[in-house]
Length: 262
Image (cartoon, rainbow, N blue to C red; front, side, top):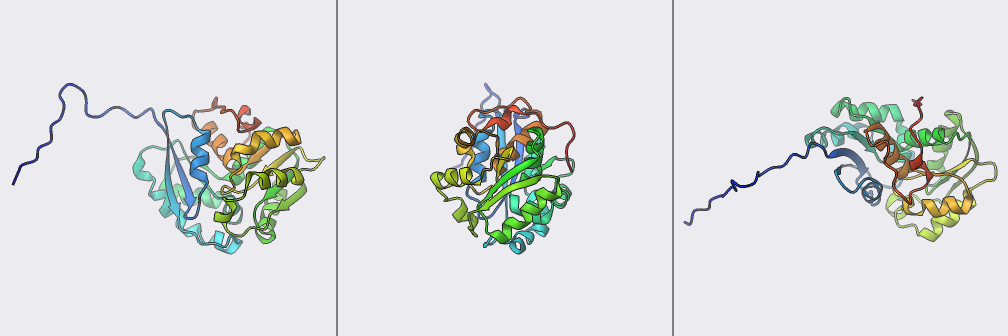
C-alpha cells in the first residue's frame, strides 16, 4: 500500500494569530431564516466572526411555544463555548425574550458562557429607545394579536407609552421571513403615529434591516428593529463602539446609554 505523508512547510508558519478577531455568539431558532445574514450585513467586514448555534423550536409562534425554549438555552449556548472567548452573545428572538424574560434568558446562557455579555432584542431595543430619549412609541410586529399582546405589556411595564400598535397576524416565523419589502414599508408607515417619537419594528425573522433608511426617511423619525438594535448593542458592549455602518438607520450614530436598564 502506498504510504501517504504530510509535508509541512518550513518557510512559512502553518498557523497565524487570529486572536484579534472579534468573535460574537448568536443563538437562533431552528426555523430562523434571517438573523445570520442581518448580523453579517451590519457588522464590520474584517476581523469579525459570528458563531451560530440553533435552538430547537416548532411553530406556530405562540407564547406557549416560545416559552418552551427556556430549558434549551443553556445547551445551545454550550455549543458556542468551544469557539474561544466571545465578545458578546445574542439570543435572537424578540417575542421569546418577552415571554421568557430578559434576565431569565441572560442567566440561562451564562450558565454555559459565564461573564459573556448577553444581548436580547427586547433589552437592546429599550436601550436604543432610551438613547433617542423616546417616551412615546409606535410598534409594528408580524405576529398574531395573542403573541403581540405580551410585547405591548412589556414596553408599558418599562415606562413607554404606546400610541399605536399594529400587527400583521402571521403565526409562522418562516413566513415572516418571506414578507415582501413593499408590505413591510407600507405596514411601517401605517403603524406610525403623529405622537410617536420613534417606531419599533419587532421580530428577528422579519427582513427589515435593509429598509430602515427608507422607512426613516418616509416617516421622519428614528426606526428601531430587532436585529439592528441587537447588533448595535453588541458592538457597544464589545469594544466596537465607533462602528457605524451606513444604510441601517440613525441608531448606529448613538452611544449606549450610560444608565443601562435592567
